Image (tube, rainbow, N blue to C red; front, side):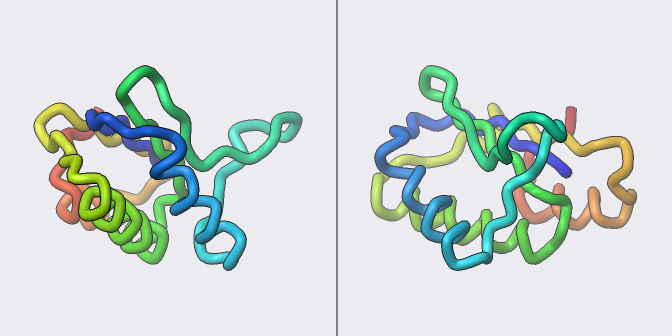
Length: 108
């Protein structure tokens, strides 16, 4: 599992449908933070978006497509220098490196 804290002005009504449609198609796999709460794929805080996803290359590539589509449609850009990526302690180093190279976010 890993999560992104993206610095972008994202409106839930604009980016939420991207995640929902991919979940309905079975492509986007939300994560379980706990056994007793519902799954989560993304959360908004003010003008920031936090994305939760499994540390799998197919999920990473899909996230890259979703974010690219969102940026193209909205005109917003992701602040790479202001964005962070967090991996769970169980994520293998080679997977961390591949995902980090794709997004160029600072690992925290």
